Amino acid sequence: MSEQAASAPRREQLRAWAIHIFTALGAVTGFLALAAAAEGRPTAALIWLGVSMVIDGLDGPLARYFEITDALPRVDGVVLDHVIDYMTYAVIPALFLYQFEFLPDGLNLIGAAVIMTTSLYCFANRDAKTKDNFFAGFPAAWNLIVLCFFLLQPPGWLTIATVVVCAVLTFVPITFIHPFRVKALRPLTLTLTAAWSAVTLAATILQTPGGGLWDSHPALLWAFIPLSAYFVAVSFIRAAWGKLG
Image (cartoon, rainbow, N blue to C red):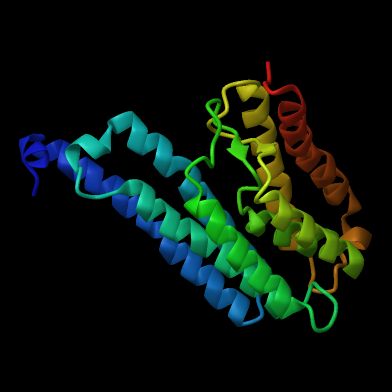
């Protein structure tokens, strides 16, 4: 144990370990998503990926607020977070794409490979965020991409185009909003994030493998589309103007 960690009050060390354990739960929920996808249960897989996203959204603010690096300097929370995120944002979505064959025949394995390889650059990029906490380049949010495929059931040509465009944008410094860390428009963004989460959860639960949601509950999808479009629009406005707000 380092001298700095040894000098930290035991209560602070225990709190830091608790936050790291909370972060590590993302690996457990990720494994549950992986198992569900492998077993052919897309709804369960997406719900567990959603739980992983919630953990990922909360652990960072907790770590920064309680300054846990000072209490446990020998544990690199960023590396811990990246290991889990690569699994939940890239590997499991790649398996999801492959398992449920969203791309035309013969392309699902290639699509999965594209997701996993391009995502490596995202997590290795030292300039992955701008000074105002936007992502610089597509942030390997493939869990959200396969979620859209599952809910919207787009034609094959559109899924191919989406995978290609997102893969290319990984290497382009166009900005994408971080819904929790970007300060500009934060009240509106957090409100719409909550609304998006509720609509998405309902739509995911009610969707069928054959895509029957368009017939049974189209209102959910028509709510999901503009709510999702908000985050895309804000991201592109920031990219075009160089700032937001």
